Image (cartoon, rainbow, N blue to C red; front, side, top):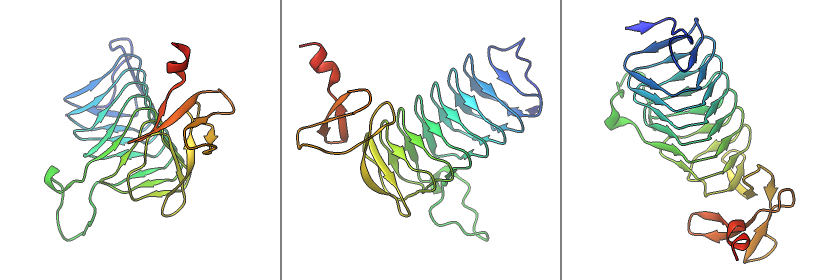
Length: 208
């Protein structure tokens, strides 16, 4: 059954009266779900998330802590959002690679899993084709079409999306200036290349 209202006075999270939350669901403390949303059953949403207007999540979707999902986004089965992910307005996830209206593909065995790792940002109106992994703190430019994996801290944009540099933890773009280290000109964090993209080394220098 759907519940049209979950009173914030009774729960440690907020759901606007125009939204529906199906049972069973788990919603973390401090999370706010705004107008005209639908959270389908067996969905887990972490703490301190901000779910904007007209968002559909689930069923069987896991969302971490501190996630922000802007207006008009649907998060389908097979999609996992780790902590602190940002989903811009009207960006699109898919979960079936070859949909046909006349052929029913609505079970988990037909879905291709998509994972968005911690801290990644996806710009407005971007499309993420199912089956890809978006690395930690990667940055997807607005309007991009992501068809393949994105490395940690990778900055990608275009159709299809291609890498055009790196994005710092603070969100500022960075370019390779040496083969060994990359530094953000804004916050001065430093990085080195790794098997998954970039790895922050600022803390290593601070501890020397």
